Length: 287
Image (tube, rainbow, N blue to C red):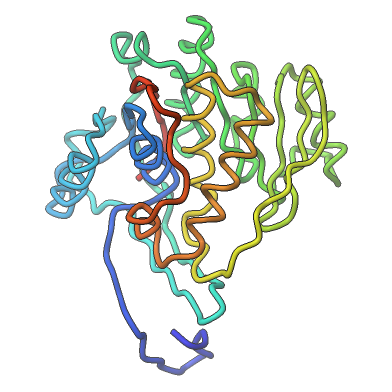
């Protein structure tokens, strides 16, 4: 749309689309698109709309491990509006009110995973899979969008944290305190993203900033999720932390040149290195 609607008003959209999304799915699809093998661990269920969920996951060759296969409830639905400058407004139910049975870790799936990405929306499941992955010495990456109940316990199993600028642990008032908080809790690699602004990072070997490529913004929808999926892919094929951040920023920025969270995949933004075998990723989150 040209402009976001004011209160008690109506605007006409230039286009509309319906697609499967959310942080977990967008990241898993990105991972698969770049050449990896994704497993999405989430609650889907058997509501009529869930057939679309399963079909789209299958289209991208992603394995689904359903944490709530017997649920008849409506899946979480988001309404997203994008204006002519590429800014967006989102109304989403997220995982609010969703009750899952205690998560059981699929050890066979985990044994194939080189990277496990979690974000805490289904906290009990995230903790269980993170602990199990950590025990297997698989890398566990936290998509730290916001602080949630249970994050403190989850951090005990986290190797890498990719934080949004809004991520604030208790008592943290700035980026420096966020870095210290996470380091004090054993997180090895930490990065803080802030849209088109530089990415600040700290690792065991070094610290610094990664410049984000500047592009003509059309739509930023899903850019953060795409960044996380790309990061996990590049880590899984052996890239060092800073290099993975740099390459992921290029993919995520490139996606903002196109509408929605999928159109970028039909254009050449970043190709996986030649000869790379398909890697394995367990992606745990919500639809």
